[in-house]
Length: 253
Image (cartoon, rainbow, N blue to C red):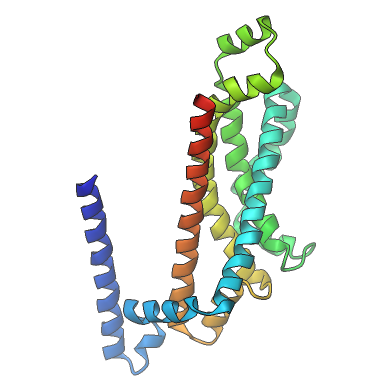
C-alpha cells in the first residue's frame, strides 16, 4: 500500500510539473500566455482566495444539493423499478427501451431538450437523475437476479417476514452491485450536473461561476473552480461509499 501511494504521489507531481512547464512555455511564447493556461500555483492561489469567501461555499452547497438530490432520487426510483422488473418480466420489457435510449443519448442533447420544459434551477436535478438511473437500475436488477434462490426458498418455507428477507437476504447480496453502481454514478452525476449548470446557468451555482470565468478569460478561476468540482465530487463519493460499506457491515452481522 505504501508503495502504491508513493507511485501515485510521484505521478501527481509529474503531471503538475508538466502543467507548470506548459504554462511557463506559453507565458514565454505569447504576451498573454497566462490567459491560455494558468499555472498550478496561480490556480491554487486563486482557489485558496475563493475558499475563504461565503459565495464560494454557497455555490458549492447549492450545486451539491441539486446534483446529489438528483442522485438520491435516481437511486430510489431505480431500486423500486428494478424490484418491479425482477418480479414482472413485462415491466422489464417495457423499461428496456427508455433505459437503452438514456444510455445512448449524449448528455448535451438531454440538457437542451430539458431546457424546453424546466428552468435552470431544476435542470441539474433532472439531468443528474437521468444520467445515473440506467447504471443503478441495471446493476440492482442484476443483483436481485443473482440472489441465492435456495435462501429465498428456505425463507418462503419458514414464512420469514418480508422485512427480514429484505434485510437478511436481499440487502447483503444486492449491496455490492449497488456500491459499484454508486461509485460510477456519483462521478457521472457530477459531470452531467455541472454541464447542466453551465448551460442552464442557475444563479449562484458552481456551473455559473465556471461559465463566468470562461467568458471573462479568468483562466486561474476556471482551473480553480474545476479543481473544486473534482475535489467535492471525490469527497462525496468517498463519504457515500463509506456509508454504503457501513450499512453492508451491519447487514452482514
